[in-house]
Length: 140
Image 1: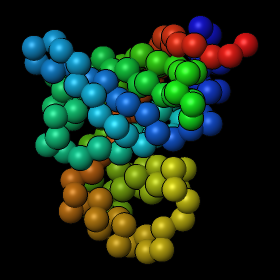
Image 2: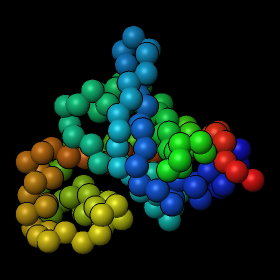
Image 3: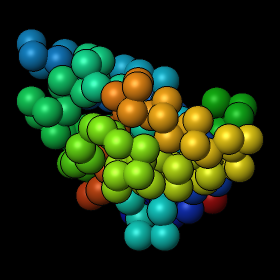
Image 4: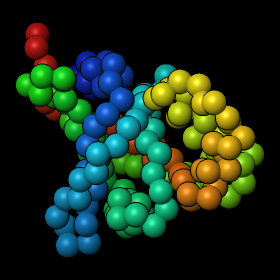
């Protein structure tokens, strides 16, 4: 599957399953929300201290599985993940990136100051998945 075709499909959705690798090599799957930027990078908001975060810190190889609403068409993006720093201030670069993420996934927030504070309190950060390979089944 061509990476561009896979990204076109994934861009039209915002929910998928992120696959990371546990210490023992088995997959760990997490339902997540995401968006694909104009740069082709998939961005996902995660919380510091969770299994997927620890897994990515240990092994940056990840996959993202995205299905069509009827479940019969799907794409898997594979690539390396990069972690932004944990948000430590409502006005730091990670908080800014989380605002961009929220706008892309859910639209405008009713109180951006409150959202930014929550991102710091929750120890949020952004996963940046740079896809290098894609496979799946899409209708022709």
